[in-house]
Length: 89
Image (tube, rainbow, N blue to C red):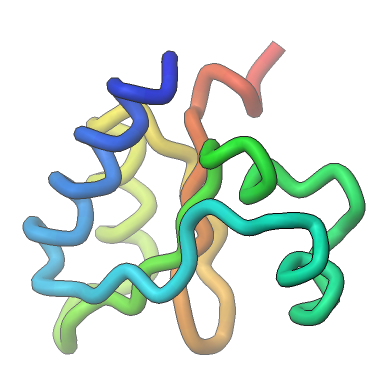
């Protein structure tokens, strides 16, 4: 999945779950300030954080993201998204 396809998938995810994007691309300083990992995909615009709207279970969010080609890590206050193609061998 290239950057353009990832962007479209993130927008679809956000809209489909009535959510809000809270983080996407970051520069190295901002990534360090939020305790991001040094090789974060946020640094390459290939990771985004979305706070989903109410009423969507974690499993439903994961399945929906997968259908869009996204890997979804459900965290306590947001969903972290990356291209699924970068997560599977």
